[in-house]
Each structure stands twice: as structure tokens, then as C-alpha cells.
Amino acid sequence: MKLNKFYILTAAALLSGTLSAQAQSANFASTVGPFDNLNHDCVVKEARGNQVLLLNNLDIALQSFTACEDGVVEKIYVSVKQVSSNGRIAAVIQDSRGQEIHGKKIDIRAGQEGILTFKIQAEVEQGMTYFLKLRTMGTNVVLEGQYGQASENSLHLNGWKLDGNITTAIGMRRIKDRPEEAFNSRNPADDNAVEDRATEFHSNFLVYPNPFNNEVTVTFKREFKGETIVMLTDLSGNVLHREIRLNPAQGQDVDLIPAYNLRPGAYALRIINDNRVYNQTLMKH
Image 1 (cartoon, one colour):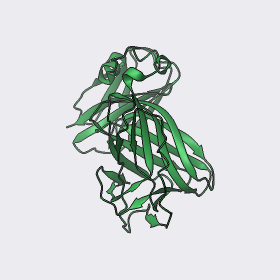
Image 2: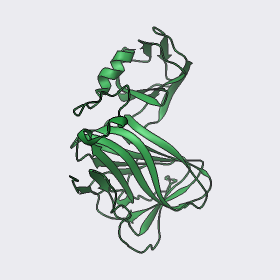
Image 3: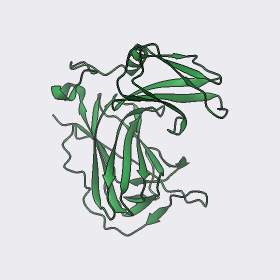
Image 4: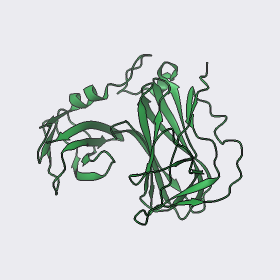
């Protein structure tokens, strides 16, 4: 049984001389929304608007949404009106602390228009707040949406709070309805399983000290094959320190020493191996 629940994704446009990405208006006819026939148990969506929002190269749009079920976000849909040149756009689901759960990058071509579809596997919990993060790379992208509308959820552009919405949708399945092939060796194949990411992280890595002062050490508890990236980021995803190790062995240490002083507060440790992302929150004294 489908839920037929719909939640508005709201966005914003705040004009400032210091803000490179600007909201630009256009008179698109208001028509039936492009996401009316999506086949998902739960769809978080925004109907088609009549304005646009320009994301310049490397701009970041971050929009919140609330999961309506315990389940898996399988697809992200983004309505694009114009692309300046060949490039890429990334779509990522983050938790309320800014930690990445899963994401995907896809290539876009100059002049492209229509719905972009990102296929991902991001586990979410009912009633919890999450973020859809969009980032352009090597190109400028015009997103369809509305400007100056009331915001039920929050949206930021390069850290600025915006008012309005962009035309996006997030489709998800309940965990109990997921097909068996959607699970992999890291995810137990039972109807109740939501991956315990904290347990998984600590079974693979030892991190100390936490809280930290000026340095954090990561110790691998098992051998990893291939390139492994260890990053310290702020909660907006900005990389503060990055180390790469090839085929790290069990017991190997990686020291993270940011080149500049960090303010006290929360940060994210992100370890990437074989398209798998492990996240841990760190606190700075």
C-alpha cells in the first residue's frame, strides 16, 4: 500500500553583493508538477514553480526534509532549466549533523534541460530531519523553482538562509518493502535492519582523542583494499584536512593535523573506501 504522503521541500533566494550565486526570475508557466507519477512509498517533493535559481560553479544548495518512514532514499530528482557547459552535479543526503549518508555525481551537458535522476541508497528514520545537498562542478546550473514563498523547511545557498523553493523530489521505500538485492554484505538482509553506522564505524576504526585539541589519530582495525581517503570536515562539508592511503594495513595510523586553528565545536571525520563512506562526529575542545 502506497502512503501518498507529500512534503514540501522549500528553498530560498537572498540577494547580496557578497553572494556569487544569485536567484534570477523567469516567467515559466505553472503546470502540473513533474513528480506526480513517481512510484515510491514516500515522496518528499515540491511542485513545479515559475522562477529559477542560479548555482555557479562549486556553489552549494542545502535543503532540509523530513523522512516519512523508516526506509531507504532510492532516488533524488532535480528539475534543471539550463546548463552553461559540460560538467557535473553532485547530490548528497546528509543527516541533521551534516554527516554524509550517501550521494552520487552525474555528468551534465551544455544546454541540458529536464529532470536529473540520482540513484542512491541512503537509510533514513521516520520523523528525522535530513538535508539534500546539491553542488555544481565545472559548470553553472539553473534550477527550476519559486522565489519568495513561505518556507516550511530550511534551505541555504552557500551558507545563506533563503526564502522560496526549488523543484526537487526525494523518493524512498520502507525497509520492509526493499527487495532483497538492495542489501549488500554490509547490510543485514532482514526486514527490521537499519544499519547502525556508529557500531560499523567503531568496528573498523579507532579514533582518539575525542574530544581533541590540535590533532586526531585514526587507527585501522582491519586491512582495506585500494585507495582510502581520510578527511576532517566542518558540518557544511568543507574539507579541513585530507590524507590518502593505498591498501592501509590493520594497525596503521593516520594523523590529522589541520593547518590552521579550529574553533571549538563539532566536526565530521569521513573515511572513503571502495565507494563506501564511514562517518564519525568529532568534538574540538
